[in-house]
Structures are given as C-alpha cells and as structure tokens.
Image 1 (cartoon, helix red, strand yellow):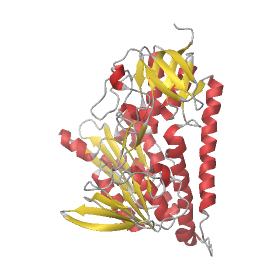
Image 2 (cartoon, rainbow, N blue to C red):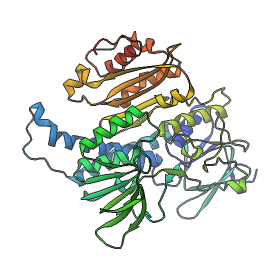
Image 3 (cartoon, helix red, strand yellow):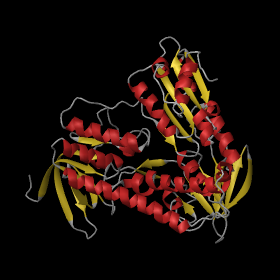
Image 4 (cartoon, rainbow, N blue to C red):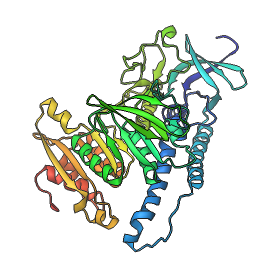
Length: 470
C-alpha cells in the first residue's frame, strides 16, 4: 500500500439515509469506517431537502388548515388566523438542523470518520476525497459502499432556478405563497408539496402525463385520493403533457399543455417540476471502472447489494428500485452485515410506501391489479374510516383500509390504506407480510378500542366475510 493511502475497512461514499446508516452499522460491527460527504451537513437529500423538511411544512400547513377551517367544529373559536411564513420556514430549518446534528452525534458515538469533501472512486477501491479548499485525502478501502443517491429530473424547457421553476429543493424554500402554482407530475413529491402550498393559499394545479395521479398505486386508492384531493381544492389534470414554457415575463410563466391533440396555455408564478429522479453518479465513472449498470442508469446489484466489482457495493437510490429512504437504510444495514460476513440478504416484498398528504396513503405488497394479472385467486376486505369510532371523534372519516388475501391460503398479498395516520397503521401489515401472515392473523389479534387500528382489523375480518361494524 502506498504510504499516502489511509487504510479503512469500509469507505461509504454518501452520507444520506442509506450511507449514514451503513456507516453506523459497519462501525457497530467493528469495522474501521469512513463516510465521505461533500455537503456541509450529513443526512443527504432526505434530511436536508426531502423527507424531513417536507414533513415539517406538511405538519405546519395542516395546523393552519385545521385552525382556519375545522377548529370551530370542535368549539375552538379562533377569530383571526394568519400565516407567518418566515416562522414556518424557521421551524422547518430548526427541525432539519436537529436531525443533521443527531446524525453527526451518532457518527461520533460510533467512531465513524466523516471525510468532508467530494469522493471519487478509483480502480482498486481507492477513494479520493477532495475538500472544499482543494486538498485531497486518499483512502485504500477493503470495501466500498456507493450511496450517492439521486437528483431531480429537469425538463429541457423548464430548467431549475429554484425560485420560479423549482424542484423539491426550491419548493421547500419559497419566501412567499404563490398565487398560482403548477405542479408538473402527480406523484408523491408533487402531491405532498402541492398540498402544502394549496393549504397556505396558493391556487394549485397538478398536471400529470399518465391517466391517473399516483401511477402504480391500487386503483381504488387512486380513485378515492383523486376525489378527496379535488374536494380539498387541488385542480388535477391527467393525461396531460407539458410541451413548452414561456418564461419571458418576470411575473408569469406560461405553460403549453396538450391533451387529446388539443393544447392550451396555463399561467403560474411558480412551477414545481416533479417528474421523477435519476441516479446521481457524482465521483463514479462507471465506464472507466467497468461498473455494470441497469438500463435505467442505476448500478446493478444482487440481493446482498454487491456490484460486479470486487468489494464494491451500492445502496439506495443509486441502486434503483423504489426510491425510498427506509429502503436505502435497510440496504445500508444489509451491505454492512454482508461485509462483516453475516449471511443476510434484502427482502423487497414487504417495503411499505407512504404518501404524506392528508389523509395519508400507505401501501405494502401487491395492488389488486397486480394480483389479478398474476392469475392468483384472491379475496378483498375493505373497511371505511367513516365506520370507525375513533375516526369520528377525530373528524377524520375520509378513506378506507383494503386488504388483499390469497383465496386458498389466506396469505396477505397486499394492503392499501387511505386515511388518517395511514403511515403508522400500515406497519402491522408490513410485519405480517414479512412473515407470510394471513388476514386471520390480523383478525384474531385484539386491537385496542377506540383506535384507528381497528380499521385494519375490520378489513381483515371483511376479507374473511365476517366484518362486525359494517
């Protein structure tokens, strides 16, 4: 080994949710671990400009909407309700800061070295780290975990300036509430951030190229979500394609939108583009390294997160699949444990997905369409929140729980929830799916009364043909 190379058992490139969790787990297993991160804070997109700040703003905007529209029903009279957007943003930033400091504390606690700078992977598992002042440190890694994440896809005629044409980053930093916002893309990010600004007073239009919002979700969930979001005030335009933009005016952006061969102009003062994300390969020259990629451009890995290069692993968004922080975290733990010699591998069938609109949307397993396409015989159990006592107390009666079970074995194949706290309610189904549980397992488990969790039990009972409260 060259004298100027610093030895390490594991070098993780990227300090997002996958990278920092991989680093901590590797250190817990007794491996000398270095995490390379060029941003000023740890946590990556999720903690800094994604999951955490968006949920902070979602919560704040939900409080505002409750105070303005629903408090009086509870006998809470608030004569004047107004927005202090600067304070809302400050709180969001404080929440982010608390989380990033927490990750930094965990690094110190677990003796993970934070190599501050941009990482470049070279042949032979050498990682060069270029600091902000230009100095370079080089590490000789026995193992490398690539966790470089993903970035928002731009449209060629709508380049991000993060002021008028924004990605998730700019949408979390607006200094005033737009009068009109157009969201290009009706997926998770578009609906969540569109909901924030709609609650705060913007006229929000969702333009989605596919026939429905939330493509890939269960059809019943999509239908009900469309109804609920439209009633809340979102304008939803599906099967519509944005083909051009005129940004010549300082005040108004004009978008050309085509549908069924006809085109029209839509006006906005802010456009949020959320049409997907692509793998971020900063510092990873796949061609030079001989690193095998998927057709999507993501790094090809097996179920132990190994790439085709010896001692090189890839996790999270850069490895493709579902672009979810919790998926990246689990992959990070698996990669670290594989490096440590443990016989583990990833299970992808039981990874939940959550949309943090209100009401929330959560799912795990297969949709009804996917089960039907497989030819497998199945049963459906549905239970509405409107029939649940706790939901009535909360005034949150929109939505339902839908359980899909195998007709012969009763094995849980999927669950889809639209309703209050759906992201928390889905977890018992995630556990059951992981262990190939049945709707009977859920149905015979005692659920506290009155709780929202009873909706899940009742849906399981409905799948067995014996719902009690419906």
